[in-house]
Length: 447
Image 1 (cartoon, rainbow, N blue to C red):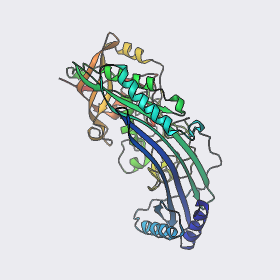
Image 2: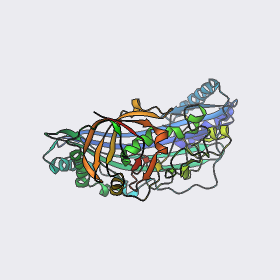
Image 3: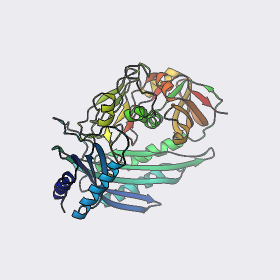
Image 4: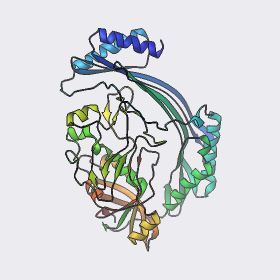
């Protein structure tokens, strides 16, 4: 049964059975993933997936159901499952089926250069990447991972209010994790690329990036506990922003799970801090012209020069707060209900280079890696205590690698204590990005 016939029959039967409004969301995707080890293909995964979710309003409640099969017998299952889920809802939250917006922005989420990608060429690139990493230095003793992946999807929304939206995206990624060892110990590094063309995957360049990072960490040592002038490197700052991104959720705030509840218009960060949510970014991992409720997406400042402008909302949370949705009603998968989440979230870059940041602190610590974010960070209170690695800075330059230290503080205090923002904005295989920043008042526990 083709999709349009299935959708039309589903809507007709749903309305006849008592639903007032209904909607389908579908996702059709494919992926190729190739891992290599010791000059051979270790894993080759080719997968295709299709899923459709149905939701509808009945007796003022929104019911959900989903399927991976499109046939006539599935229609009754979807309707009955949605009815049953609606009957179980006890809260009085108002839910919406959206009629759509007049205009939707054009967003670059799909690269034609990646169409009909050749798996044989992907294998050659992965094997070459591993080879380049091993040959870059005689200190490379192992490869912890070497992979190339391609994924694409086509998704859309149809509802009984006349909304018909679709979009497609694709991305190619590749990474290598070389391990190096000498008399000073053992460490690893990561080289990676996000590409919109297979020609952008340069094995020599990616390997060099990973091995140089690993080599730079050799000989690390701890430092005495204390308070240091601190640079949080862009990738480490991304880790913090990712972990605490949920604090900007209007849903979390309404459930008492974010300290930003009711803080709109207040200073929550340093004046040098501006945080953007941009679903219209070309090639962004979370770029989309519409959210999963069919609302047109747009770029918005969450924090502007330290002041909280808005939280992120879907239709339900916006109605509850008496504001307009920010177009951040997203699903974690086709089978899930609509929640609230960020798109491409980033800390806006400043003007100072990373070398200038080191000169600015003169002597202090660069934090490059954080571990234990799931267990050592409390997203409600903002408190964190995390194992960290990095470098010591003397005379405005890197002096030696630092390890076996713990970084402790509070995320909300950290935002207020950022005094300089660098210009090295980076999205490290993530929809969250950040430049490096100088932060005051962080406590470092060492030897």
